[in-house]
Length: 62
Image (cartoon, rainbow, N blue to C red; front, side, top):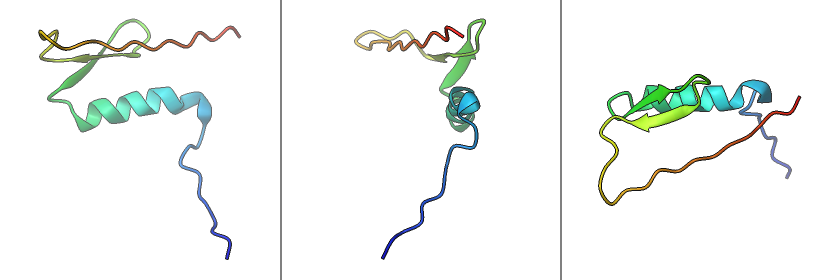
């Protein structure tokens, strides 16, 4: 039998903003959003010795 799958993403144009909003909303005691674009997530208790930051970038050329 074939299983029917449902989409979890309604609009891919809003995906990153919604992921960030959800992550920060789920952990407001640990995270906050910073930066002009609102796409930088920062740990409230950071920086910490022995821990690293992770950066990811996507440039929209349109």
